[in-house]
Length: 113
Image 1 (cartoon, one colour):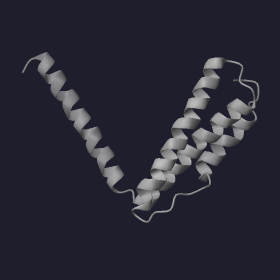
Image 2 (spheres, rainbow, N blue to C red; image 1 turned 180 degrees about the horizontal axis):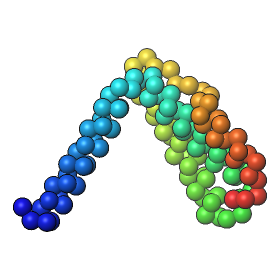
Image 3 (tube, rainbow, N blue to C red; image 1 turned 90 degrees about the vertical axis):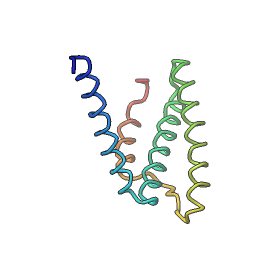
């Protein structure tokens, strides 16, 4: 096998290994745990984007991006509620402590956006 063949083989095996690990990790997550992480992450994106708009970001591209983040994550949250309702899973309505902790320092960054 030539040098290129070994390189391709190594890349394929490495990718397969990563996919195996990621799949195993996802399989170990319960629907409720996944829902909690997804909901909290989405709420973080919405709230941090709302902070940017509220604090008057001056760059129009930043404002546009924040507005798009709010729209996208609001839709994702609604889709998540519909999907998990069929499984009887409740969607959390408050941030997990990890995301709440990340949000706190952002509130002190007024005017730096």
